[in-house]
Image (cartoon, rainbow, N blue to C red; front, side):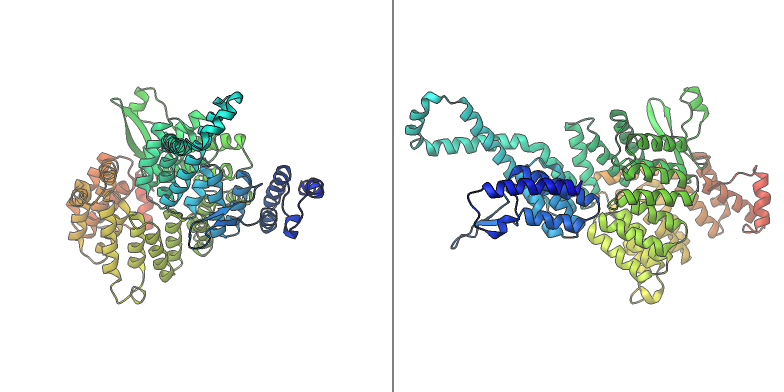
Length: 613
């Protein structure tokens, strides 16, 4: 295809260049001479980029569409305007910016995307890429507002011209000088009014994507929810909303959003690999969720055996069973039927085999996804997760680093820190955790990473021997930012438990059960965090009860531990940690060794051979 495009370009270029009356500049000999030639050049560069010739494609575009010229700024005037090539189109500018991003030329890519917005203020792809490159929302909004105002002005002028009559040309010429100022003021006023009406959805979208790429998830959730109210049943907005809900831990809302996307468009592929990841988490978590409809509302219940399991209430309501593994397999089949040249179906297939504990097939399919699109950040993240779970942290670091280079989100930082800690590279883990805070200073997960890294680092790498205290401060700060986050709570409890301070552990866990940790910081915590706290405690209270029983067991308060284990099991009979901990406690109370393998085999046979994890 590249050769055919080049032959066509040569014919068109020679024809227009030889017929052109002006051939003064030697540099113009290599530039495009017509719109048709510009279109062919863009197609040639697209073909080259698909073959992997990124540098060659970028150099062709630079040669054919020379760098912008500067207009204005003469004398003391500091205002300067950059002009693009007269044959540049939105497609050529977007392609040029994309090639610059692939070549790690961020500043040049920003210039091209800015010109793309000047061409078309509704080019939301350019808005998103500018947000990815770290541009401020005010700068992007300024570009969009200027473009929309220019678009409104052009529309007003075209309407006025179409409404005029040919016979009145003389009268218009005589009256033009008299009413010039008035017409300009009227046009500016009308243009500003129209631009405000046209700008509303674009402004909300700019705020949404910039908040998302700055890891301000609560703000991004509010903006995308507002957009979802304006444009209900829009798949792209719903998929972004589902991703944010998934990262915020709103599992029920995220799953409903994903299902709405599939109901609207069963062939939608973009972003559905994260839906597969959600199903995988439900399948492999020690508490796998199934929905139970009671009294007209949805309530979460859980199972430790992988998959949503049936219950008497479900059977009574004739709702049937819902197997997550089968749902994940069906999603794989649907995505492969829709589009097998994109990475999402193969990432989904990798997760399906990972749920079946087939790591070889899982890593093979994720490699297939990366071969189809090396810029797919989630595929690199999944590859790192598989390698880390296979006890290969050094190899996992490479994949997590690549995922973080493509998209600087908190999950990739979490993977990097966990891989460094598993590889005993504590200094790198601490530096990476601090970098995560610089990317998301108000994200509890980033602050938690610093606490985890400092807590696990040896004393000689903790700095002035205060590593444990710094870790405690970081974890408490994370709990202040998001009182409902379980990870900093349990990490802080583990630190105090390792020091033998069981009284503080009990107080922390009881505050978590009562939700008092949220009320103490209610004035400094957004309402979304408080609601998240109430939801998490309501749905996961049995986990805290099981952890509290574990602390009581370590403190040799067996009666209190027994009571907490029974409370946890009554809240969720399938809580594997509580059932296993209760078995362990009963052995201790009988004077047996709970870590004896033979004893565990006998206990397993006594309980019917079931495994809980």
